[in-house]
Image 1 (tube, one colour):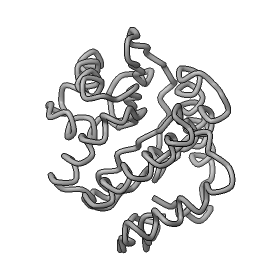
Image 2 (cartoon, helix red, strand yellow):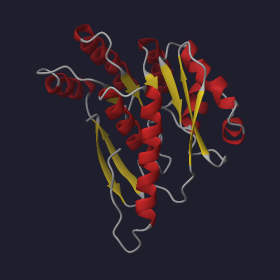
Image 3 (cartoon, helix red, strand yellow):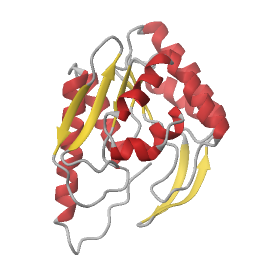
Length: 229
């Protein structure tokens, strides 16, 4: 856990970043008995936390050289609270030479790639250009989620090194769910850890998030579910 958060039904109330060396110690202790099958990182609340992730991955890959890493670049909360400024975003880009599976939404991709968000929202084909920017910086693959786009059906994009782009279509479901991007990355990571191909993992994660949205759309009258970042 990289940060202690206080949240209510509307979103993030308070963020308390932990010392990077504290959560690094926790992570190493958690994997001291058995090597993980996949690493997934989410909220990294500052540049120093981003840099510490390099230390963690370097140590884990010493024992497991082929360890896949799903990098979910959480740049802001659902309410728009910013976690990483320009320095943090630069540090995030520098991590790409470690070959992660990068899983941004369209807004995160636009910020990190330095391209206009309007093009990514309106024209799915422009997402390929953004993904290739990340591949050129060393990412092993890019999963660019289309939830913030306007197309229907929704189009998730998968581009891996040396492979042609793959579009994964999902029915667009009405409604919203806090933490949907984090949940998507976690589900994708679990499928990768179980040995599924990246294409099947992308498809499975998208289908699961859609199913959760459908469930919540029928839960009128129930109290809100508070989700961790």
